[in-house]
Image (cartoon, rainbow, N blue to C red; front, side, top):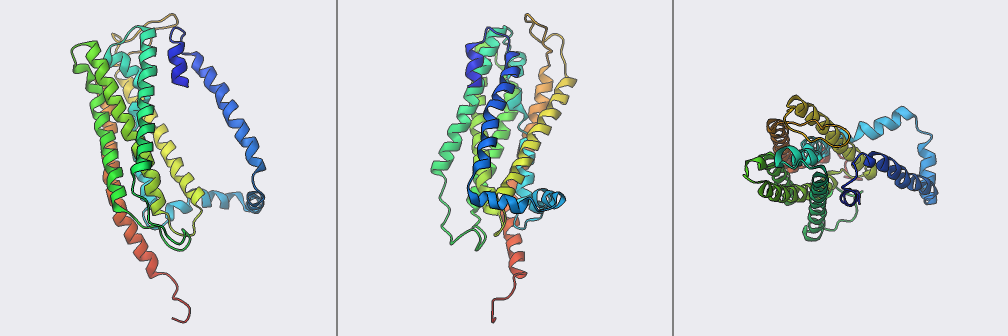
Length: 314
């Protein structure tokens, strides 16, 4: 909806988005926080028990214990962190449209940014949905608390291929400037953005499945997946921040667009190449680590079986 609003109000300076985002954040976040307090009695009773736990112990359970799980889950968190660090190109679509594609007129720039972003996220949503429909179903087990979930190596190979595909799209993105006309550059940017979005959606859908397979039995699933999500968000934030610093080194006063408020800072194509190549390298590293996960999981499970207590009477 935000990108649709950018297109509808393309003639208005986009600074209104900062105020709109703040208002919508509170409007959407406060009601769930109030409603969650009236959850089921079972959750309320559990919350009462947790409230008696020391705060320091709660921090250890939330942020330290998941990093010590056997079976490859900590390495999966490293994978998603490294991949998220390399997801920076999707945060610079507006600047690339201006400096690489060459769209200088502000209204046209905002319009194409809206459409390109919609293209990216719709591709991500379609890829994630298709992944859910077409992915092979996990074999049914008596329950998660009775044994490890079976590791399906094919899932990790598909995830690694998606991660590497994202890296390839990131690598291609800054080179749209080689096309001779602005129209051809715009078309190429739309195609690459769709590919980038599709691989991005597939990666995060597949990472959820892979992380679930790596969870040991008898753990707090919600806490473990929250731990993994924390590393995903931390990677995205740090990667975006580092990419901004790299790009700032390549300021180009001859590139930019002036509007009715101020002149926007422009950046040379070498800055975007540095950012996107670095992101691609991080994606390739993450893809290589993903391929190591099944072996790490099997090694951890073999070690866990060795330390299991003997059966009664045996």
